[in-house]
Length: 143
Image (cartoon, rainbow, N blue to C red; front, side, top):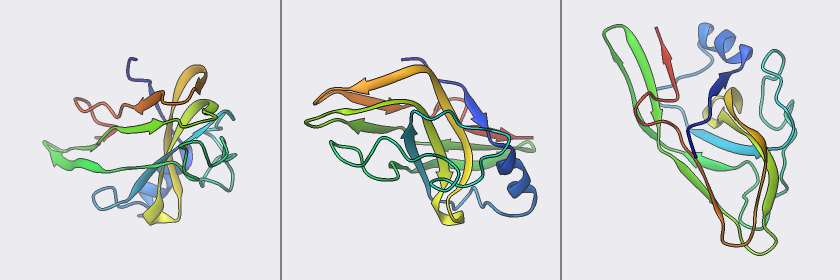
């Protein structure tokens, strides 16, 4: 599956300008949902964004951690690169979900952005789904 486009939340840009995120040392998670995010008004995971699917069948409440591969500045451009994470369904499956929401657990679950996979996905027992954080281009760059 190709890398889905990453859509930033307006609140991420606002919080970043106020020092609300430390992208170099932040702890990030990605959660799945079938509820369409609102980039203009959503601010915090699990408060303004519906937490779905329910925990179980291989899906942990709040989603999976995404570890930082690099968070560096070069030539005046900051790039955040995260390692991919894999969801593996067990009996009963996971889903449906369409969006993967990235949030910062070290900043009280403030939202960064989301990936939109264009249609709902359901995983059957033993199927996997990889959130590809784009190792070449990073999740996001700040210029």
